[in-house]
Length: 336
Length: 289
Image 1 (spheres, one colour):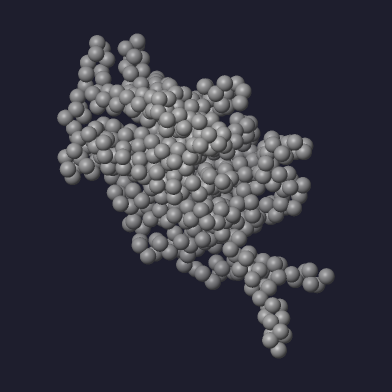
Image 2 (tube, chains in turn blue, cyan):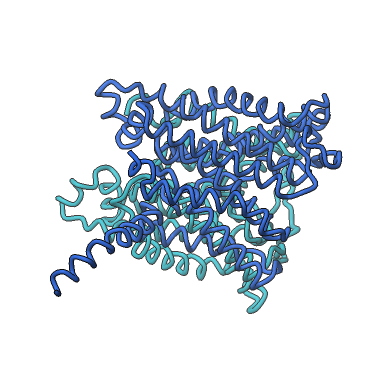
């Protein structure tokens, strides 16, 4: 029993949890905390995307649609009706789920590249529509979120650490949901649909229903990230909220890390954001385009040499370290 | 009113010719190699910068630089097929979609790095020239671009039907395995298909240069249009892409004219979503597949 309770995997997880929990107490630099928050946020968006793109293999390039709907729902509730973003964040999630139903109905009949193109179009249409909603949603100019000072009930904080813990909480939630789905009947159905949709249907899996369910969850989680992001930067406009870059980054971090794996998006985000932070500190921010040029190169390299993602490298290295112990003893015995 | 509509239709048709060059390239690559090239717009961008630098450094007219941009892009296309696309052909959806996607990301940002985000324009003697036809105003540069675009599309049509290589390409598009059994070398056919597609994108770039600014993100305008046109015209169908592109141009232009300056794209995207909902195989795909 005790051996199971303290399995190496659990020990590692515990150590990791301890480190990320005390990190903001040790690191107080705003610049570093900002990077950590970005990592947590984009890892979370990646985890949400991964449910759709990784497990069900529905390669969406339009997750900005839900990010934006979450952001706009909570902001409209806050500014027009004075409702706390804590309620708004859930309302945004529900709005995103409702939106995912017609979008899914339209796109799920399409496969592969058709699906990807259709999802781009849905996010673009939403962005263009919000550019037109001048009276209700501030049109192209966007709006700043009124700064109420340090008011936790309105999801506004003076310390960056608070935002850090919220983002960490969201990521933990996303990972827990993914873990739970992975180990439930739904996970097996999802993988079956992802591997071969026709074969899955042939053995009695209702592929459309499964895709609809996972899309609901994925949309809900992505919307949470949208609300959090606008609360964090105190600003919203259609090009920020429905930015194509959000859709891209969600897919990118998952692919680089490893799609269809629990930790893939996290590994991918840490790698990409760390690279981008390093580039920024080396070159300064004056060189527009460097970051995404490097992202493009990394993505091409991963696709050509490691289409399963970089997480495979990590698990192989880990297995080698774990195995190395007993093996060395054996070799010592043989030598002796 | 009637004149306004006629003017909007003419404007739409003229720009639709450029959309056609881009979307024919996308549909050709998809038809033959079975890959959606998300980077097609970036090759239009490269074509534009080639023409821009030839015009500013050596004073070569953008339209004349077509004879340089097209072969250069053809070679890039052959290299692209040989060194990148070929390696993901046996892999699943994810690498096939995201390879060209990553390439697009890379090219846009490399251009941003090298040429900055500034708009580059080339002034030609015919840039401001307009022809009056009754009540209609027809900009000469756009008319020339349209005419050359149609000429190139026609040449491709003849190439696909009258030459052995063109027939081999159509055969490979219809059934890769049987084509191989008939002695067609797929590697060669794929290289030519991607090369030709990129050459068309390069031509579109050169033709745009007299009346459209070059900037790193310029390709995204055209590739989105091209995707819509290619889906409408049924992926892989060259004639379908041509007709759909002209329709897209007109739909966009009418949208701008009657719904508002920023509504052209909404009209186009709604058309796409509507088409996908009603006829997922496009207008020319037939009901069964």
